[in-house]
Image (cartoon, rainbow, N blue to C red; front, side, top):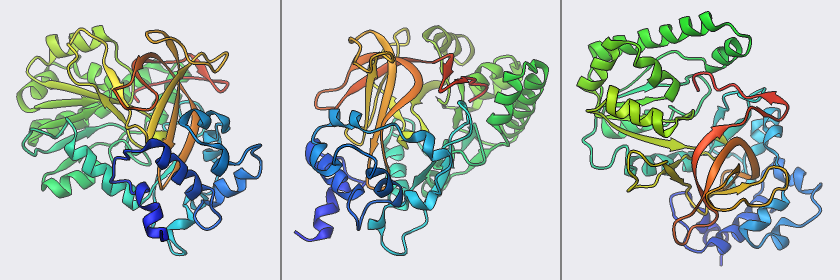
Length: 365
């Protein structure tokens, strides 16, 4: 078997059908001298096990340290696997929202971007709908959340509208108690959105829950959304069942609502499990085995029971990035995954009050 055949299972456009073979190949790739990234090849020297021979199941990923805090300072070039060649394609670099301190950085290699966009276009926010213009009402600048829609509209020959929004400034204002300035900033964001909606055709609204709630305080915006938008696709912050029911039934009864759940550190959000009623908690299924969740008791690291709340641990295992055993800032309800999936599904995400010694401030993202 030549190298091309050996690594073919890691092609990000494929859905692996043998999780253990996929994991073993990924360990060989990320910890091979000729294929691994400088970051992981250095980090491997401090491990008390050999990832290539000792990591045989997804449960073994818990043996890795949680390295995501190191992504605040590591040069992004060191994250690119050497297997992409001596002159690798340029990665797209994105940053986290800075909810728990200085932002972390992740890379998306071009092959991941291409496959991710393909999956987006097959996903529920696009499947069964005629292509329409998109209004992205979320973080701009170094954030991934809205960037992939640029590729979607190119393929669909539609238009993406966006606004200026800096969620870190809002978090800073919120954490220092400057409520009046937070409200002024939110008004600034909504002014931009209202002008677009009033003058342009928009079929898909991508938005965060705090901004969607803020829209309800403007009757003119509520009317524009109901009259123009076919689908509200929300995420980036948390929403309770009661809030979702109120928004969908009292404010936006003519607009379909969908959501996603995830983190920059898994590169791809988990989607809603279909078939749930409006008064049930949404269940989110990650893209196993590339993305897997584990719901644990933060004091012991052991899994909580199904139906119980615990802290979510996320793993990302792909050709372009390897981020295992990442204890995230959210608590969730543990739910059995779909048949054949590795790990847990989750519902009812909610932020911790504090994480890694920092107060968790969601703000508007």
